[in-house]
Image 1 (cartoon, rainbow, N blue to C red):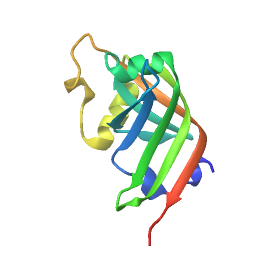
Image 2: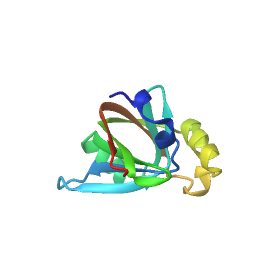
Image 3: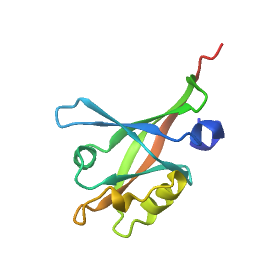
Amino acid sequence: MRLDEVNPDILANGTGVLATLDAGGRPQLTVVWFIVRDGHVLVSINAKRQKTRNLQVNREVSFLITHPDTDDYFAEIRGTAELVPDHDYRVADVIGEKYQADFRTFDQPDDGRFIVDITPAKVLVTDVRG
């Protein structure tokens, strides 16, 4: 399945869970805001966070999005993430607009931001609603 085949209601959910691997190979999960653009999932992360360090070592990720009305219907996107500097907050501003937030207020002046650009390799949808 491709990302554009996933129910738009799932992709419109407010948050997703981004899973990366830490230095010991253990999963690290973070609830994040995101947008979907051109078949990719885009996330904005602070350059000084553990998630950034994880992705600098291992680009393999999993991203989980549940349907906004039920946890029994969700999509898992497995893929590879590219870290792209977002010095001008180009993508951070788009994501922030979706959530009515300004990422600049979350960051210290010398922090910096990265775009996590997830290219899906496999998209799985699970629907166990009754």
